[in-house]
Length: 275
Image (cartoon, rainbow, N blue to C red; front, side, top):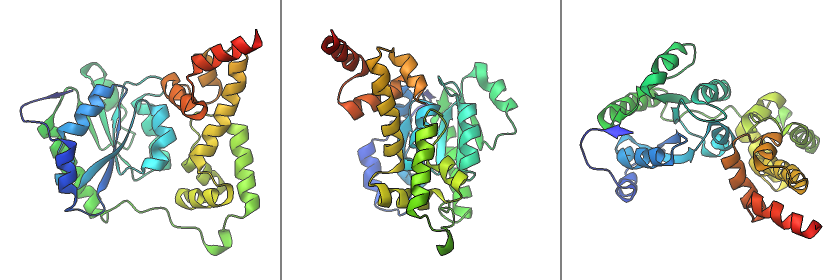
C-alpha cells in the first residue's frame, strides 16, 4: 500500500504526542484489506497533524452502519470494495454528511474511473501504492481546510424547543426502523433527516426514551429477523442480504456479538434440537 523510505510511527508514540492537542480531527479508514488499514494507521504521524484514527470499516456497508458513532471529519475510502464500493459510499455519505472530507484510494486500473466521478465532492484521489510523503502532504491540506472552517466540523443545529421529540415521535421512529431495517443504507443520519431532527439530537433522545442507542436498536431488529431465518436453515449469505447487511463478514460479526455464536454454529445447534 505504501512505498518510500522512513520508519513507521508506532501508535504508542502517537498517543504520547496527543497530549499536546485538543479537539483532534477524527479520521476513519475504509478499506476491505485489513493489512492496508493497519499499515495506514501505523505509518502516518497522525498526532503531528492534530489528527487521530477513530475507527475502521472493511466495506462501505459497514462504514454506513458505524459512521454515526465514529463522527469522522476525514475518511480515506478504497474505491474497490465488495457490496458497496467507494464511489457508492461517497454518494451516500456526502449527502448525509456534506462537510465530510473524502479521500479516495484507488489502484491504477481504476484511477481513470475514479477521476471521471468529478461530480462527487471528493477532496483528493490517491493512487495505490501510496507514498507516505504524499499522504502527509494531502493531510496537511486537509488540516488547513478544517482549521479555516473553524477548527471542527460543526454539529447540525439543535432543534428548537417547539420541535422537541416527544415519546410518540420516538414510537413512530421505532416503527419506521422495524418496517425498513432491510434497507442497507438506513442509519441514524438518514432517519434524522427524514423526521426533521439533527442526528445528534435524535441520538440523545432515542437513548433517553428507549435505553438503547439507534445502532443497537437497528441491529436488534436485524438480528431478530436473522435468527428466524437461521431457524429456516437459510444460508448466511442470503440471510445477511435479507436483513439489510449484504456484507456477510460484517453480518457475521454482528450476529456473533448478538447471539454469542457464529451463524453456522447457531444453525447447526438449532438443526440438532429439531432432529
